[in-house]
Image (cartoon, rainbow, N blue to C red; front, side, top):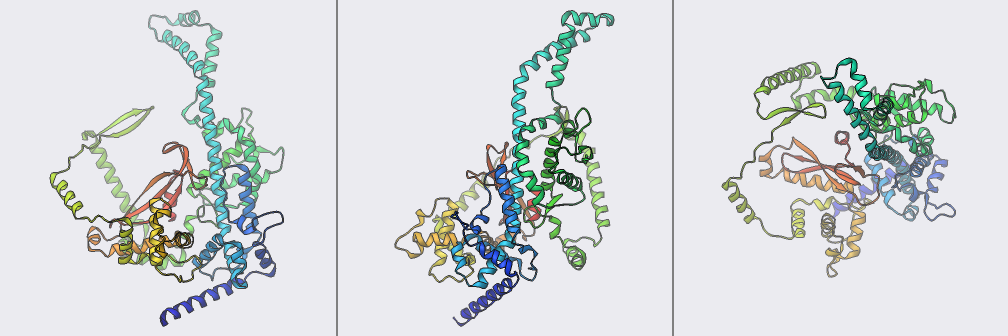
Length: 585
């Protein structure tokens, strides 16, 4: 008991010192602005804090303007100019998360130092959150414009198919005459015009040229003009509020953005000075007009589309940010890397210099390439097929192997040994072995003074895992399972950071099991994702015509070690490329 009280007093002293350090940083003017977050403006029901911590949910240009205004409103607090480097980032994040979940009235009743510290942490962390939300919405808006333009183009193309078919059939008759060896060359033209008039043939040529599209023209960029008014509503605020940065690969996009920013507000700018490095073949056909002039509307769409692509590859990034920042910023560099290089190279069994390793990998790749090329003619499982005018490698699938009877008997024996228990009993037993439920702490980081908290936590976890709600786990005769207790635990204890700590506890416990150690050492992991449809309106879900047509969803990306334990789950919006999220994690 004495040790418990000592630890509690030390935690209280550390928290008080953190609040005092943060409360001293803002100026009196900043403190007044921060205090103003807790009051509701005249004629409104919500406080400014409640409004700022709400992320946008609709994908529209007014929502984009609102997201950028939210970012500007947080920046007005000027908390990012304060020197918060001595404060641990984890403590700032915890304070900001509490400010995002607590009522404004609760924060207003805190002591002055704690109140100011909580608001400073909120403003500091949520500047990055608001900027990320704005870019999430921008990504969704650009994707929606491109998708709708493509759908409209495909719909219009279907309407023109009868006319295109008729013209193509008449031109087919012309080609048959040209290819007929019985028709002498001097009489080819006469035979053709006897079959189809010259005016009709000229019209058919124009029809085919107008309605046919090459493969690179299937994006239907020319259908985007109907969305230009949508872009104009948020583009000035976007160029004004968000400062983009870029690596070497993203510099052309950054230059084009600077040009758009320079001509903003000019009704007739000189578009001949527009940077053209971002124009690929598909965009050049619509951006550059027949008279060699650049169309401002198509150029704007081109810049936004290239910006979206560069953001997804992190060639262009913003600061501060968690989801759209520079992934290289988290890498060791300079003296820190030089100090860590020997240990890292020794652990990975690599040479300290890159040149020998690259030469070794190059040699292995060359040998593998030559070996595969030599074996291809003699490999019956490999063939090359022509698909849409391109050569595609095709591998013959492996034959199915029947399960041996020994494996079937072993599976039955193992199933017979497994006890039949309720899921609630299994969760409580695992907690008894690992103590993972103790990792769930109150959002205010204060110690809980309730009995059987672990039972309440396990019940809430089972309810959320089974997606049944709290009602099936409510027991009026058990205080730990009352509805009010379970609801209180769900709101104050179940959150991402506590789930991460509990999962780490389970992974650590499994790694000590002898059977898991026989599987592997835990140094190797595989990763894969599961796609889920999201029925509610949120920016964290994206469309995918392949996985959930007409709906929005997300990807749950999880890692699995060679000890068969899952760790570090990541939510990826939609079905976009996973690699930037995986590397950032």
